[in-house]
Length: 82
Image 1 (cartoon, rainbow, N blue to C red):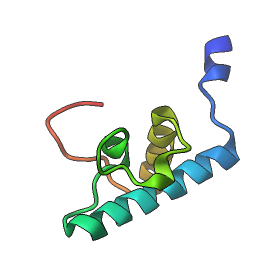
Image 2: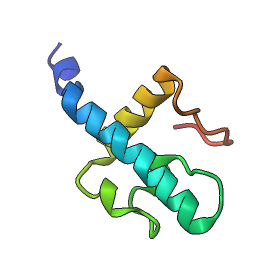
Image 3: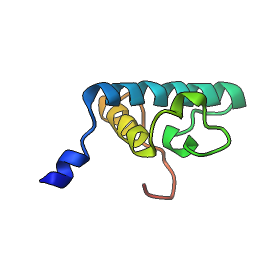
């Protein structure tokens, strides 16, 4: 039970991470002229926008999973699993 408690994200922080994930994907797509990248893939990359800096990879993963559940984002169609 303790592990589940540690893996929960505060609802406000989840919303902030989701907003940052969308902003990052839009920013990189605008900058590169390409499609929107999956925000988690930007974490630690040279293209990582500043808006992701205050979040951990786990928080951005949670934000992306939330956006997928809500229908605002699709899980990337790649050969690798997350």
